[in-house]
Length: 475
Image (cartoon, rainbow, N blue to C red):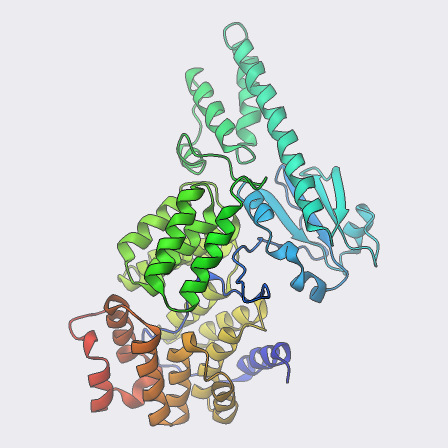
């Protein structure tokens, strides 16, 4: 069975399976690697680090209303999945400037016809929020697409600068007209955050207040515009080195490299995403993680970076006992961009609240987002095992035995299957091979002690000894 067919089979099985109605605050939702598993391999063992925030625009869905939008018309889902348009730094950074990224599938014929996108000629169209075409480029030519979009952003920025200058000339003698010019810039502030900040200051001088919360999202004074022209192209190579170090569990080295990437381009939200998620999930330094995510959320950020930061803040908030606040952050994360990790951790939470069907629904959503993701499949198999599908779950666990980062979930599968020896072996691997810091170990050992999936081991002296760092630590 292919990975994709397996993923859909798991989702279908979960839709039919009665699941346990008793659970506690177990772990296993995953994390690290920037919050998005690097499933789009770059070849030559070079990990890909950027993920463009594409959303599928099916027939009937509302068009983006942002000042600029990118419409991608691929011939097939497989073509879209493998395209380098998924991992372009320039397009990711454009997402920080409120450029919407939309994949238009074959079933959305009205939109394809509106933009004259014909089958057999995959194309990318840049358009205004009103739907007027700005330009187009072949979908196979990533550089041409990047250049087209960068020029469109430059042209829009020049037009906003003209409005600022116009308002400055009018401010002394025609206050209302100057305000109108500045407000036009403010309405498009995300296209050019620096000009948005200028417009806010000029409006303030004329007695017009802008929303403080919206102003904060533009970042501090002096922060450069998100780079869509490759001025900081060296950041990508440093992030690749950092991710390679993280995947090899060389976490101090990864943190050093991610920090360097942030220093090279402080306006790059992806660099902050990798740094904050490493601190949250891998090193367990939640004070640093909160500061990093707070910095990311107080500046222009693409939807994926914002979603990862909100999820990370939500996970830490739930762990501190502020459940309603944490769930609200999860909701904000999904509104920014739906990620499998957010759905998985919602499943963890609702199992802990003994709402198994609600939890299963979130697992199905995680699988639907990425049925090829092995971590998604292993995670779902834990609950298949708990629901009695032990042979299928054991087969998935055996096939994925070498997936180190899934050791906790693999242990949970074997605990449900009834193989104590394998469960203990994998828990030990999780705590002392995968994890490298006692700050993380203590929290996850407590999670294992509370986790329904390990109920058969909770009184086992070897298990109690293995999780001894949990003593004195509570959820």
